[in-house]
Length: 132
Image 1: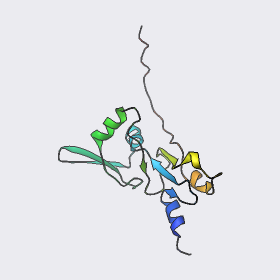
Image 2: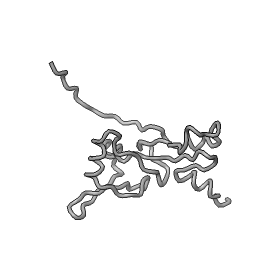
Image 3: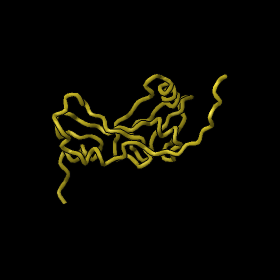
Image 4: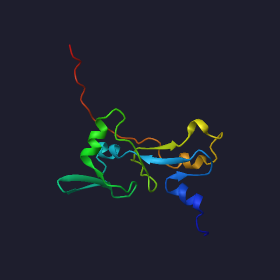
């Protein structure tokens, strides 16, 4: 089997560079925490708790308190570029660098379909009674 080209390697690891509108696959670490993903690890250092992904879908380690603060902000904590193909339970999207300047149809539709666009999660919550 022939080795991967740079373009194929980039597409396999979370980004596509086949046209002027670069696309990146991103994951939302807050989704991992909210879903109680069993692939998230945590450790304490210097009185702070840091989390990361055992599967290395994202490779950075995040201060848990800063993630929670970010989630309370209007836009939420945000997304991180994936380092490898996401798992089915990962909350992911494909972000386009310049969607308003896209050069027509996608030339690599397999990239857009190769990862789940939205995670599926089952949650339980109690409805709060409406204030009277």
